[in-house]
View 1 (cartoon, helix red, strand yellow):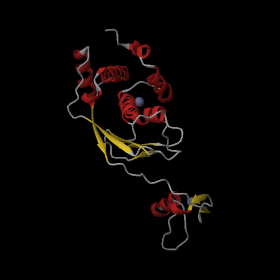
View 2 (cartoon, helix red, strand yellow):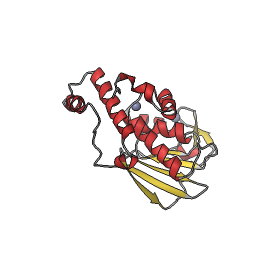
View 3 (cartoon, protein in one colour):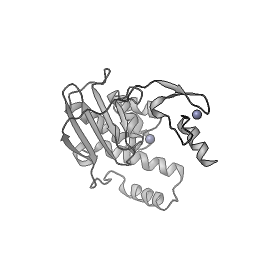
View 4 (tube, helix red, strand yellow):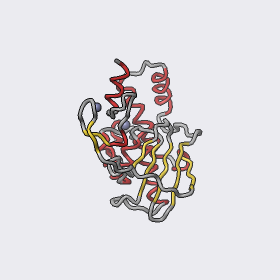
Length: 209
Ligand SMILES: [Zn+2]
Ligand SMILES: [Zn+2]
């Protein structure tokens, strides 16, 4: 099986698009890719232009970029919500059909591709902190290609959950910060004791000195 540095040439078209956007192929991106593909199937979705899809990612890793490309969810549109829990878990909702699924990576997933000895050696080098950049890249590539060859259920658990409406980012008027003068969303302003409303960065400067 010739899946070495050439892995890139064997990638499916939709994954290539994710790699182009993200800048490299890595296990994180593949996690997002797998979840997005499964969600598109289960929710009978096409890529979202009109925000009927909402993605909630419980981490801010490379995976998020694949969700953006394949599901059309983005921070700017408000249909991509990041929760910084450091968990390899994602909830994808379809607003029009009112269905939702949560995907969470299985504890039991283990690398089982070839060459196994090379992977184990690289894995050990990474754990001990001795791996070179080249070894780290190779490790990522092996893991990414292993993930791509597994059945989805081996990597992720899928659960249909009750649909809920994720809150939209509220629109709010802007006002000038009393300290730096920059226009800031009024709901994001803070008012320390002197009651002058200031922006968050200015409030931190005040505290630290
Ligand atoms: Zn990455
Ligand atoms: Zn300010």
